[in-house]
Amino acid sequence: MTDDEYINEFSLQLFDFYRIWTIKEAYVKAIGTGIAAIDLCQVCVELPLPESSSRVRVNGEFVQLNFITGTLGDNNYVYAVATTCDVKCAVKVVDIVELCS
Image (cartoon, rainbow, N blue to C red; front, side, top):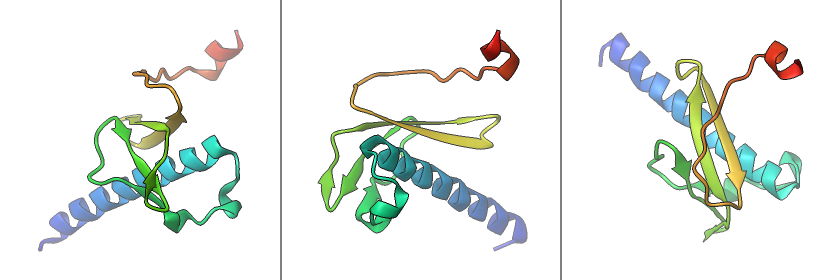
């Protein structure tokens, strides 16, 4: 394996780590317990990771939440939102000046 291949492979692994982490974080926020109150090893994101939504199991059971995922800023930022609605949505980046006006 060349160093370029290694870097590319590692970058994909790191990207998937961030995607999995944000989905787990969205789950914890949705149930309102806080990250210290839950064993994140019991929260499993179904693989392979699809492009725009994910399913999560807790203690082997699928949770009744939909997880909307995506990237922003030329794929430099990863987001995940947990919802009870079955919706398709788009994320709009808003400048703070635009938000406050």
